Length: 226
Image 1 (cartoon, rainbow, N blue to C red):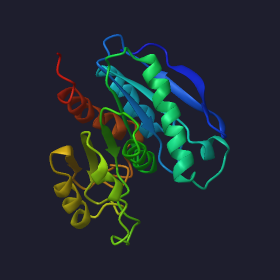
Image 2 (tube, rainbow, N blue to C red; image 1 turned 180 degrees about the horizontal axis):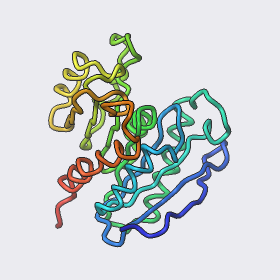
Image 3 (cartoon, rainbow, N blue to C red; image 1 turned 135 degrees about the vertical axis):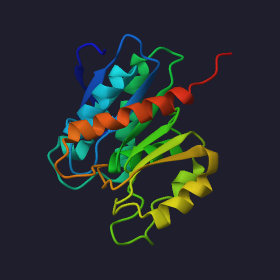
């Protein structure tokens, strides 16, 4: 079990401080930095349910807000600003982890996509976790957001609902195949963009239900002892 959640702020270059929350179980074997989707912040029930369940499974977590949401704006940050926020959050997690502990990155939709762009530009994450990757806008499968993924060399886990309008299987499957051994797809049958199968599901429970899959993937890809 994790101890009390640490609340603090992270300075993002030229954008000021953003809120963050960190929790670390005593038996942590890895850390995971998790970013929110475009329409909800770091304390959305889906993310809190997910990260608390990850803590229970031995993974330390850090959630944070992007600058636009911290400022109360609706429009998402530009990619350079979001990547700067990611780098700052990632360093905050690394500073709290032992030197040899792997630190992973990921997030919900926009947050996961920005994590992957940061890694493609050199952020040294041990791997990536996508909680509903926004591969294309709904109804526009020709507008792919995938080019940078092929530059990434770390393990990637895609958790995708089969009914996700942002990731048609006809488009997603070829991307996963091209990524080869780097990518693993876990499909949630009937799941939407937030991995929900029914609108009646509690988002906390949906998030928590994904944690065992993610924790097992992270554990499987731990660096081998030298």
